[in-house]
Length: 151
Image (cartoon, rainbow, N blue to C red; front, side, top):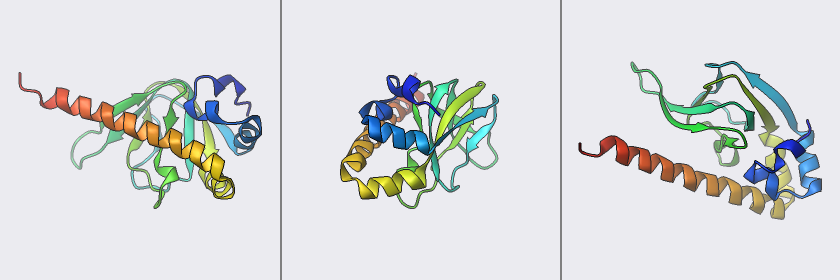
């Protein structure tokens, strides 16, 4: 998988040195989803993470007896899945393709192992994941404010 085409649109790949990018390429594969197809389910093992190359993925929450509710929509260059970096390595959301979607899947176990060996890489990855967590939390807060704002 050649990641160079995605490098400029991905905050994670932008941070990587050429050597680190080569490693990420070695633990990646392309994934294609049809619209409506589930990428991962809440509570399942987070042993991969993804970068969208084309299409859209919706992050959903589920409530028994109700249809899933999309909390955020992610597009090209976005990192899908953040739970892979933090124990217990289980997904906190459902992720579903909202259109025909192509992604690059990375072996999270191999990346975590490489981060244990290389603290500089670990800090780069942690910085990107933490920044994305903060941005998603902020977007969710704004959504909740809009949802619960009095008419």
